[in-house]
Image (cartoon, rainbow, N blue to C red):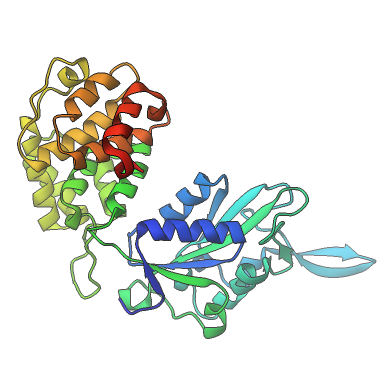
Length: 355
């Protein structure tokens, strides 16, 4: 990708979004298709107590964006006014983050209409309550933007220079060596993405995301397409290799589909997960793929009642797997592992690795 803006990984992008929300300054997040720009913006907003509203400027023309026009009487004169768009925050809205999704897909002639929203909090004759700075009612509205660069062949238009100068800019890049997959896994667990997919993406992180604008294939692996595989494949048995390969390959490409289907078939060699939860199984299988699967399966099934048995089993695995398991359990809203004896034991053993 051409260097449109300073490049950031998943963790730094989260931090940058939080700073933008706190300061009220608009932020444009560039990135390849399916890398998770919109979901990241929404999840960060929710994590700091804001309600995300996703709007696609490309769905509006310059007139529609301001609201539907209507005639009204003011001081005996007939004038044209514009109805407030249904999505537009009104006084009393509370804390809101507006995400202008796929902003560069809006034609260059339409983008300036939205530029006032990100710079002044104004769209036509409508003004955002508490734009940039919270008002007396506690309303606070912040504008984020997402988009693909025009070099990605994603039907994007170049941003006019005066529009581009309104928000700050970062480019979200995927690096299989950073914690992008782990951060996504937390979201995936909360949204019930098929655990076979989550564990596979942890195991083969290089196949989690692979986009090349020069490639001709329509299907390729992204965060978005793996979620789509989950929706289609959740009722497919792991040993049905041919059907799993077909479904996965139709979303993430043939090569990744073959690898994922083979991985699912290998899960037949997993030890009895229920036995681990009950404390009757202790043998740890060889092979990184099966151990990644166990991390995901056991973190999702951990409860206060079986936590000691699960940790006793995890203690027989490498520290990298233990850290991964702990962080996944720590994101579980059902209970707080830090308030348990196991949590204390893990903290003593792993120390700064789990921070």
